[in-house]
Length: 614
Image 1 (tube, rainbow, N blue to C red):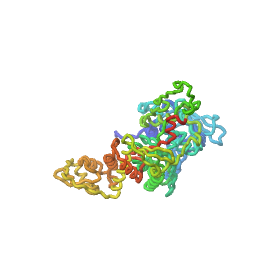
Image 2 (image 1 turned 45 degrees about the vertical axis):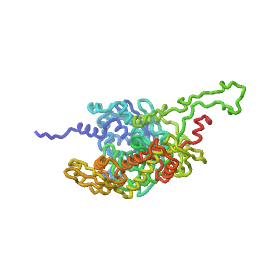
Image 3 (image 1 turned 90 degrees about the vertical axis):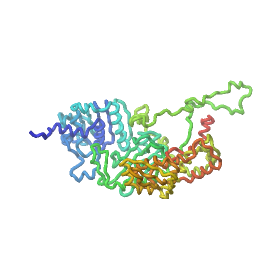
Image 4 (image 1 turned 60 degrees about the vertical axis):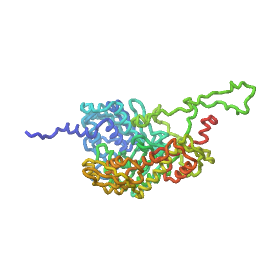
């Protein structure tokens, strides 16, 4: 008897369902997408125990006809496709016809639905893809799907689910992402009998972002809107004051579908290098509208990955838009003081008009300026210490989400002043702590702190960057050549890329068995640890494409090494020279590592700290 045999239909259905439904998150995502495809204006999602025991999605969409309901839970039954050609012009979120069938094979499903022209609704119980019972009931237009006891018939699969908290957080994450990308639909998300998100429909995008992600997030966004090559790109990107320690706040939507695309993220992130701190990521909400025939969404079960037919054009548009929008939006960080929570009820008379007959001791008011109400430090954890939903719940705070629509006044849209204009209008007045140059703007009554180390780093970095970009590298001969020993694979890698090393200003040649001799290095590197530098470049040689790409990090480190340090004494001439050089930089906002070079403090901030004004 042969070893190969056909699987029975039940096993086939379970395997297929397992590919589509990995966890409760998969069910919620598929049901929300079905609701959106049904033209729903209001969607309510409710889960219990991380979605393991109970999931309910209710919408006010088109509903399902009686005859269609008989087919809806069969595999490969869909209203989105008719022919193979339709697969290449998909506009809907769902299209495979697998979701409902898969859900019904791994859980117990209950459905209530009604179309606008039907007299009554339909209530049905579904198991294993078959409708077990069906009756006419009274219900509003739309569809409610209830999913219970996930993986009740696949106990092995059930064991691989995470804790209720983890599963709930994953569902919350996708609900927030879908809600953020659909401002014409209101969402209500109930988690273990608690409303954690409630959005309103038909808001403008900035208000919509505010209601979901909060004030601090929305106030540091810059709008983009551009169209070229049939590609419409719109949404918001963060300025240089908003960033996170991960990519959780990077939202990309293609024709309304939320996707993950590391190439798009990298294209945008490249423009933030040296504008925000290292190992931090910009935030953005990006909508891309394009011809459906130019993309393929049928490459992954989750439909969150996508292929582009015209990838270079799309990246070119993104690159241009970010470049043209980001740099004019850069702003100088402001230094402020926390205001006292207690308001002074009665203004005290001026000191010169005090009653001289009064007891002076009674008139002395001692204030503790270390009190937390005046100089309370922020104790929020770094974003990376929270998972996605925990951060959202911090923003939501105490009540049922952000039910109230924020007022227009709450959403600040400051037009950032050009730092080059600021530097032209201020005058250095001295150095404090041998670290910070103080500069005063007498007209606007503002004080500026310039970090001498960060500023000099920026000056040195741009000098080196220009040398690299122009490929005008000057090599210096070593008095004593350095010998580096390599492994067989390293030697092979070096010989394959020896021409690149020569372009970089290195004079290196073979020296015996698996050894090389280094005779000269680029002058831009000063007097480095020659062998360490060579090994570092060799390890990364496959990523090197040009002098500019050589080692941006190396240029940063070199600028940092050569720059004036914190604590170094600077003469008045040196202070003015550095100030003038910073003014001529292309990007004087930050050092190469992304730390700010300039901070601003207004006279009003100082007077508040001294309680001169409240």
